[in-house]
Length: 146
Image: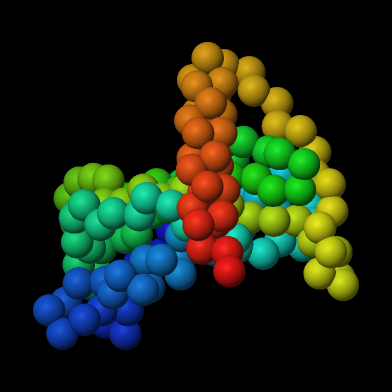
């Protein structure tokens, strides 16, 4: 997913707003998950978002999303964000985030999703890391429960 950063996306210093980046991360993640599940989805969690570099007005923001793990009704997606200077083509990573989406039906009930095919060692390693993040999220959720 690619778009140009416009003045209405930016703060008074001419850098993209963090909330705009988060919004685009959510959209890119949802698209990747929709392609895997072909079902309705809701965002359940956002993990580990850090803003490493700012993105200026006029630069391109590039978002690359890939599903890292799929469980019974939920899945995790990794979204990497890059900036690209339009005149030089210089590209650098500016953010990375992990999001969890839950597949639902029109009534809001959870629905099963297809398994994720892991073909490479790198994909299998990402799935192991996704399982670790999932366990940490579930523990944190228990601590927040009333």
